[in-house]
Image 1 (cartoon, each protein chain N blue to C red):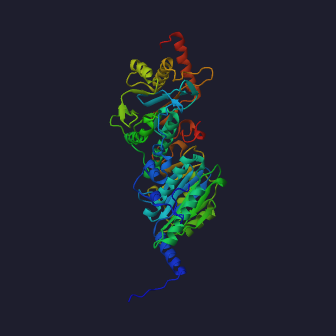
Image 2 (image 1 turned 30 degrees about the horizontal axis):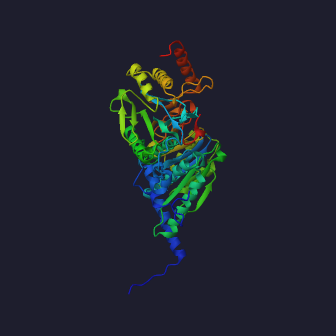
Image 3 (image 1 turned 45 degrees about the horizontal axis):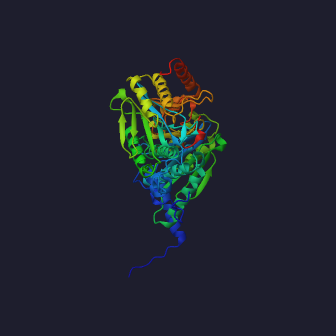
Amino acid sequence: MATGFDPSGRLPDFFTSTSTSSFTQFLSQAAPELLPGRRPLPSGLSADIAPHGTTIVAIATADGVVMAGDRRATMGNLIASRDIKKVHPADAYSLIGIAGTAGIGIELIRLFQVELEHYEKIEGTMLSLDGKANRLAAMVRGNLGAAMQGLAVVPLFAGFDLSPSDPARAGRIFSFDVAGGLYEETGYEAIGSGSLFAKSALKKRYRAGLSTDDAINLAVEALYDAADDDTATGGPDVTRKIYPVVMTATASGTHRLSDEEITTVAERVVAGRVENPGG
Amino acid sequence: MAMQFYASPEQVQRDRSEYARKGIARGRSAVVLTYEGGILLVAENITTLRKISEIYDKIAFAAVGRYNEFEALRRGGVRMADMVGLSYDRRDVTGRALANTYTQTLGAIFSETQKPYEVEICVAQVGVSPEADELYRITYDGSVMDEPGFMAMGGQAEAIGNVLRERHDATAELTVALALAAEALGSVGGENGQARTLTPKQLEVAVLDRRRPGRAFRRITGAALTTLLGHEAVPEAELGDVDAAPPAPAEGKPTESAASEDTEK
């Protein structure tokens, strides 16, 4: 990477400066073109040029949080992808899911992952969960220009708080709006086109202090309900064996359910719906 | 009228070298050596300010000398590694590229500025086997050396290096390697040339774990370090953790990353 190196071969000052521990702030000096918010956009509405990711749900449990996302990306009336992964670990104790323009969302996740790891390495300690959420809000805010032209992306952030003010509520969920607004949610939250239906399902069935296993079940049920009424959300694909991505964040870190684990849960949910389509 | 003194370039270089060497010699030493399970980095350090740290997945940094100077280099290394990893892929970040950057930087500082950096640094990259490990020693004047499996830095590096040279074994267990490192560091600096026995409190210890997928760097501190120094093995899971203490990934899975599909299982 030749960015900004002076002819002597010496690292430029902003590489060694102690003024910031933030990777995005550093990039804004070293390689601003790598930051999504810094690119000039052609004028006009460009909402339909790229695939969109859809529904993500997150549920707080007694041990932490569960986050699940369907696997569909759409472009207008077409299915752009059947097996996109929209839920990822942000770091060892937190999860991030995205809805909206998939390309920008994936880039946001990559940048956010590096941002958190970078801080950890520079400072030798992890950001607090609120600190991580605030950083993410700032990054979403940076995308406002693109959002106003139809390339909006909204993340859902959840994690296990290592130093919570209330130990019973170590699993915390944060939602965002396109302008970078940050809101802490109680209990559960969903984003994306099917979120209305997913949240309605969760509203009726969520109870505080759920076990992780029950929350996983509930998340998959909620995604089923979203897919039932929203064409942009993918339901369990039994023929191809494509099931939602489900991740947990607890005191022992983040964990993605294996294919076998999620197949068992998804098939049980589908079997239940065969008997009673309303769930 | 003020007299203009002439100093030959050779004299200037010699003076700077001497100045840097003296500065480095004042500090405590550090050793880096390969063992069967990875690369072990040990520094004699009684402060909480770190001499050893993580740069990237398979790369660690160890330094001796002036803290503010090697800390600036460390930050530069982390930033560079993260930027390359984001632009290309996590696998495209290499120890050699980093060593090249450091040698250029230190070389430029040495020849262009009045005061050279009083540091000596090591860039270590762990491979799949001890033969694939890479250790680079970069000195204050920007010279770089590819070390053969072990290296000592700091004030009495030569004496410490001699102990390592005689006894280093790349197929040794962690306990054996750590005992050797502690003994080597303790072999100098005692009263009347006597060897010292270093306690866990005097040591900063970390490993690049060959078998750990994703980020291989782990600090060994507290009870795990005391046990290891007592020549007892410590189960894998009870070793220290990365700086921020993320747990070992469940079932040996790497921490997933959208940054590289390759690390997803």
